[in-house]
Image (cartoon, rainbow, N blue to C red):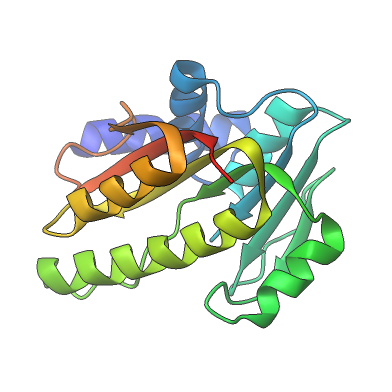
Length: 193
């Protein structure tokens, strides 16, 4: 396991990405084509910024990439950042000052883990519910949503909820995810307003 972690860590460092999680988004976008040139992308829980870097590569110069996190993020070319809490209702107003609608909302949000799997899972679901609430208010018709969830009892309920709002929903574990990790990514395409 350590060798695998070292490989993606070294690769990220060598290629100038802020974290190994960059390769998760590369993998997901390669398989599901969520982010395209010119898209407006909202990244929730974006620190340290590796997904912002990747999203910016996909959208190109004509796209808009906005990151939100409670932690500060060092500046990235062609990317906007707001230091804010996604659970605070006022954050939605700040997001809408940048753009009223987005083509894609991505979320790599994760709670501070306690080591108690059930509690960590419930916290993960809560953050995903908050991310979905924002997505439902800013996504364009047919827009895409991507989130990370810690697997557990409520995962299937959350996926059922997504199926009511999106035309296509699938879970995916990127190659760069650690095998022992309980995280999975949920891809939702074709938002139904």
